[in-house]
Length: 535
Image (cartoon, rainbow, N blue to C red; front, top):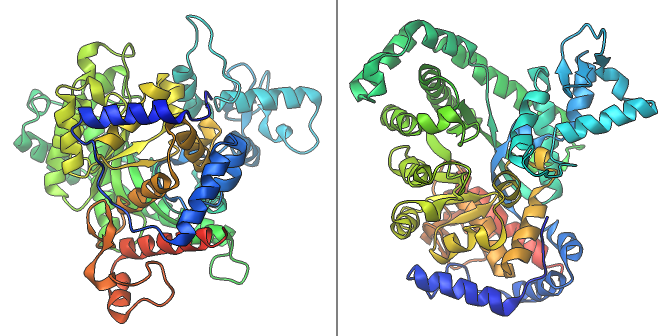
């Protein structure tokens, strides 16, 4: 990690230049007036900021971070957990491929359970190699060799094959880590079973009319899939997620006197669609995802909240079918307008793909794909008429999920090459997220520390990031704030009182009771008060 201590004058100059270029030289006041406690806390923050990353991390661990909105569940779990679970499942380890294999563990295959308890020196060596293979822990670049991009995406196949019965345990791990960092909300991306939908799509097949993205052709294809029983898989997907939530709450002893702090972390799920598959399968999985999320929302299950597309954006099929997939989303959004959409878009950079492929992904994700949030958005300045796109993102309040560590690891983009300060100067809402904290071997506090040091952020900047994350969470209900992304003024029902207080007025209490989002935002303000009272 190439962190450095902030140099105030050059950084201020760079931000001022970016603001001037985007026509936004003066940022409006979008936060409440600072209290004396906040001003004192800001001084403590500045002192730690200039002492370096270790001191800053100690300070920011308990800083209220609100939400992490871009988290892949499988990529968030640390390798050590997967190795333990492989032993419980009776799986084997292939010491050459450094991946799990089905039993029997004969020949070169090693029982995974041998990598726990009192292990030998040889077992420790294999254990270490597995952790490295399942993450970027010991990755070192070699000229013309295996890139960190390749290493990052290769990890997922290596720890595949584990039983889905561990899902609740994995959710608990991520929730416990979040609670330890004073996070209160997560949106976890996950891919539930879709074999039945994929098989139906293969039988029905693809045709030229679908390739033309004709809405009527999409409608006919959708009906064919439904008529052949695609909805049969919805109950399976819903039950799996409900069971996982039940399992994790059981592990955390929620509702008892021994309740773990992780019980205070609210979780929603985003349905992952694999964009690197044949188009008929992508459409079928999208349809299953929209149907599953809609059914969950209609049943008030508090589980599935939205859709996202995953797999490397620079993959061959992902690039070839990008516009087609956005048109699929355009059609399905017209059928299921209540289902939220957030999309990986612009997780690209110069040299990774041809220049012409950097010119449209973010814009199409918003204008065709109906994305309410954009994951990564790294190549924004390579898009056609980038300044107009930034203005559109700001005007439409499309939030960018910023993943600094994975952007450096996968794309080699960091520091002044990253568009994070450009988005902020253009008033595009941004929030920090982890992406795959287990693969990257990080957590959200790490990302806050990194952002603070690399971009000379103030304490108020960090509060803005946390508030923005909660503002754009896919929780039902109205926002606590009167205007989108304007945190200077709450709604009328909760105005002229201490936000986050223990005794809101009856009118405000009624408003909060009717909105899960506003209640979560009120809780974030309460946590700010508690944190700042320490100093």
